[in-house]
Amino acid sequence: MMVVVYFLILSKNPYFTKDDETLPNDHPKRIFTYRESGYLNSEDLEKDSDLNIFYDSEEMLKFVSDSLGVFPLYKWADPLGKNPYSVMHTNHYFPWHFDGNEFTLSILVQKAEKGGLFEYAPSIRSKDNENFENVTKVLKGDRKLVKSLDLKPGDLQIFKGRFSMHRVTKIEGKTSRYIALPCYVKDPLKINKPEHSKQVYGKALPIHFKRENIRGDGLTD
Ligand SMILES: O=C(O)CCC(=O)C(=O)O
Ligand SMILES: [Fe+2]
Image (cartoon, rainbow, N blue to C red; front, top):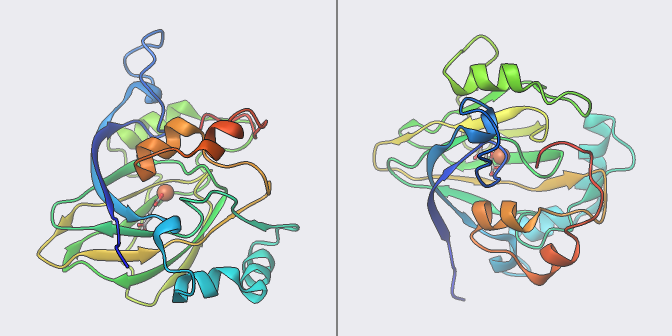
């Protein structure tokens, strides 16, 4: 099977939106950081791959739902982002951002020699409060709201990536970092906006345009 890994080098704001010149320069939607990292998108996984079997099992969904105390919880309908592998090689960096889905389970497969730490600002925004002020502080290097995880291969986390801004620090040394990212949502229909999908996974599919106008939680994407 041919495996396509999308590597993206582009400047991103934490919301994966285009620049908005109507906003002041220091608004977080206007703070862009260089990103270099890749994905093995969900649609390119072999149908019976371990990750697909794991993601499709009802037990896993129930485990994540029970762990979070969120009912009902759904597997994500996004064909690219629902359960990808993130692939990061030497010098790659995945800057601060929010996810389009609420919850992600991450399982580290291979660890970088150095760097590649998962950092997050727990619940820095909520459904009713974007908290642009604190988001800006973190983007400018304030560490007070930041936690850092040095994951070991096999570690499993569940994080609230739509509300907790997060990043992966620069990969140092020759060993690439691989992590599996099964994703879960509260809305079974909503998927990434086309721009978000292009910026993160390298492309948008017809379904991203078709579902673009489904009403979401009101947060910046
Ligand atoms: O690689 C990680 O640990 C997190 C990846 C991530 O934040 C993402 O793919 O949106
Ligand atoms: Fe993320």
